[in-house]
Amino acid sequence: MGQFTNARGYPIGQMSRETGVNIETIRYYERIGLMPKPDRTAGGNRQYNHDQLKRLFFIRRARGLGFTLDEIRGLFEMADRQDYSCSEVHDLTVDHLASVRDKIANLKKLEKMLSDMISQCSRGDVPECPILDALFEVN
Amino acid sequence: MGQFTNARGYPIGQMSRETGVNIETIRYYERIGLMPKPDRTAGGNRQYNHDQLKRLFFIRRARGLGFTLDEIRGLFEMADRQDYSCSEVHDLTVDHLASVRDKIANLKKLEKMLSDMISQCSRGDVPECPILDALFEVN
DNA sequence: CTTGCATCTGTAGCTGCTACAGATCGTATC
DNA sequence: GATACGATCTGTAGCAGCTACAGATGCAAG
Image 1 (spheres, protein in one colour):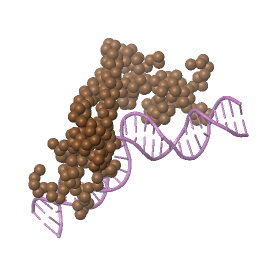
Image 2 (image 1 turned 120 degrees about the vertical axis):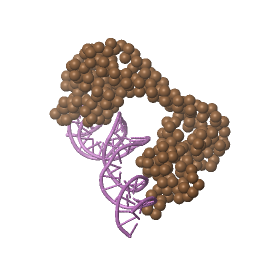
Image 3 (image 1 turned 180 degrees about the vertical axis):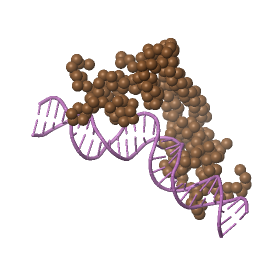
Image 4 (image 1 turned 90 degrees about the vertical axis):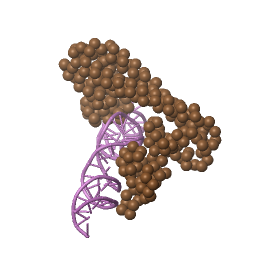
């Protein structure tokens, strides 16, 4: 970060490069009210400030952790209230963790079913395939 | 299954009840060409046959295993060709298994990050929250 | 002044459904 | 035959969370 470079704010392309969030996605976040409407140049281009950069980083990290946009909105509301309580954030995160664990459990079941099916398969160039049979079975 | 009940085919509601696939979803599958266009009564209601019931079961099972609709289309194409080879099915399934394992691995990383964040949290009614801090950190 | 990339708005598409509204079908009962 | 009532019909729009255009401008360097 140069010392004078951002006196007039960051254009959207720089926001994108620094956070790794796609330009179209940044505009999308603005449209749905997750990012604030930034200042504009005389010509109409967006000019972001440092707080907005931090906010976008936050969104990106939270998305990376699998929070939905609505959950992120909730986190911002808590953070924006001066009196938010840490335990609300805690609870939201615990809920999210539970849903992640749930997904893991389901995927593991899947994994077992798929690998069982695969191990039944002789892999020959024949028209009898135990995998297709398993899927076609009516009972 | 009664012996005469389906002489004239299954109406969509029965297809739905037997397979557990939502009526709207069955019509959706038809629209995207995953289910064939069924016969119609004089009045225009859909009348399905047993093959179509099997096909819908197949879709439902494959969806349950996390195959995408496109992958299922691929499986049907293989099954519909008289000369499909079992090893193509095998390979598609192996690929799918790999993507399931990949998802599991990613979710496990997530799980660890979330549970670490949670264990940092004292849960107090204070405005310093290590969870929010972790998300807001710029570096 | 021109070149040329960056950005703009607006809209449509993606996956896999789901949810209407408003009309018609089909069957049982009177 | 009339009527009632659930099942089904078509068509369209919505959900999450983006992504991908088209066609018009902005802006900075040479």
